[in-house]
Amino acid sequence: MTAVHGTVLTWGGVKKVGRVQRAWPRLPPSDIIKALIKVKPDIEKMARTTFDVYSPVSFAYQTLERGMNYVINVNVGDECVHAMASETLPHGEKLTVLRIQYPKALSDPLKPF
Image (cartoon, rainbow, N blue to C red):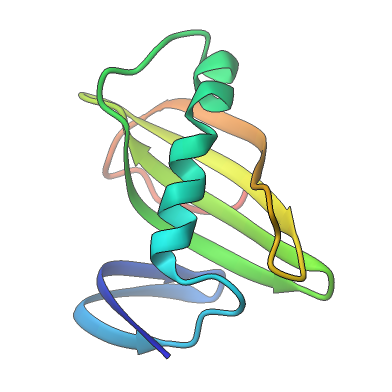
């Protein structure tokens, strides 16, 4: 179990909490955030712009037999980017951005697309 602070989203719903215990299959949240930082150039290319601000805000995940799917809300200043990404397990070495929705508002609901 990994302690998570902030907003935790799962495919099944939203939990807004100060602290929650959540079982993370394969990757703890800090590793997911590090992987999102690595794919910033991919997201910028898809958005056809560069971002001075790039901060993952919240995400949802789906566990599959051979991998994980993520939908991520990334703050990029006055707007946000929603990104769909996947990784292959066991313990995927690379997060692959499949598609994005940009621009989005911080208040826009985060759901698979």
